[in-house]
Image (cartoon, rainbow, N blue to C red):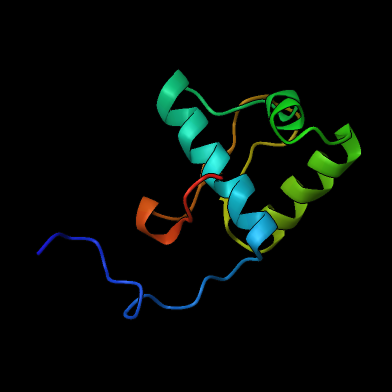
Length: 89
């Protein structure tokens, strides 16, 4: 048996499906590039406007899912483990 929980034993996520995709993107981008994404990286991936990304980042921070240093780029830190994230679609 692996260290990952089965779908049935997982607690329900504390985020919406859309928020989960943003969180998964932050995780995978950080893993691939060795640094967190800038808001423009997220904007390009999801093909959304800058205000949409900014609002989502603020919401994720408010919900305690990420932390960020205000005014500094590429400081997003996930406060969830990989097992708590959905797969990136």
